[in-house]
Length: 149
Ligand code: CA2
Picture 1 (tube, rainbow, N blue to C red):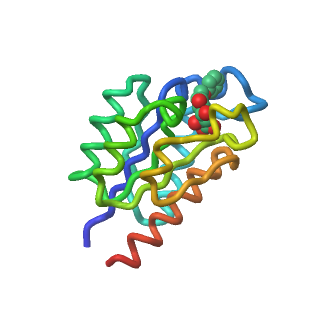
Picture 2: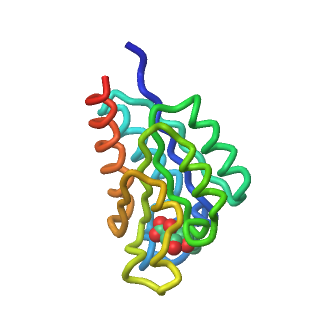
């Protein structure tokens, strides 16, 4: 049996985690988030490919890569959640399970954050739980992948 690979994609400005806005995004850094995901994945017996980009086109290329290389996708599209039909289209083209994660509760914030185009293409959405949202997304996807076997 081969180990399932879950791609974890992070959008623009998430490289700044831990440096500003701790009241909204917490004090942990992106490296610490990757470590949490890697440790969670190890415990679940899955592998992760964790990436961050500030570029819309690069995120779209990576989502397309997930079509052939990954068993499931976790994506925090950050600001592109609310603007990018192109990213939504790329996620719509996937045949693998997708969970969208937001650190903050986007529904408790400015009204322009209430709509995520990517949510229209995701199978599940987790928001407002900080880093734990990524951990829960990994657990849910590992369950789904196990059921599919
Ligand atoms: O809550 C989330 O995870 C968001 O996806 C984060 C995005 C925001 O545009 C979405 O509405 C909700 C922003 C990411 C910026 O992250 C920063 C982290 C630290 C300091 C500055 C920005």
